[in-house]
Amino acid sequence: MTQPQVEALTKYIRVTGDLNAEFIEFDFAIHDPSLFVELVLPKHAFKDFCKTNQVVEMTQEQQAFNDAQEEKWRYGTEATLVGTQRNSNDQDDQM
Image 1 (cartoon, rainbow, N blue to C red):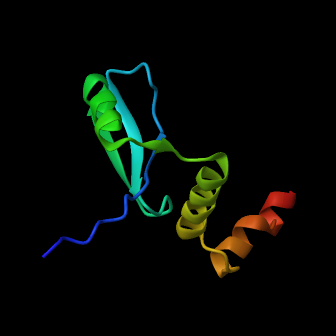
Image 2 (cartoon, rainbow, N blue to C red; image 1 turned 60 degrees about the vertical axis):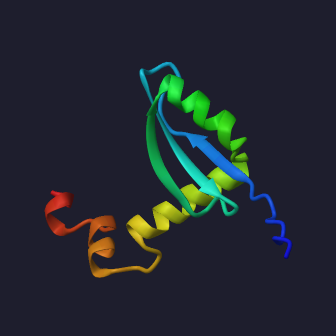
């Protein structure tokens, strides 16, 4: 029996920290850049990791999508009582 060939999946990175730091902070995704984990590696290990995994940097569009999703998750999209109060002035603010 022959083993079925596994399709090569694209592996993505997005550096979120300083590339000149001792430790590199980055996002790593396999196949779907919107499903990623946050990782930290020493600089030399990061370079080896990228080479071994043949990573591709996320595009600006992919990064913008991830940022928008994170903001939606963090702040929500529906108006709430707290959000309404935060954006309106009450009488004390007008004095």
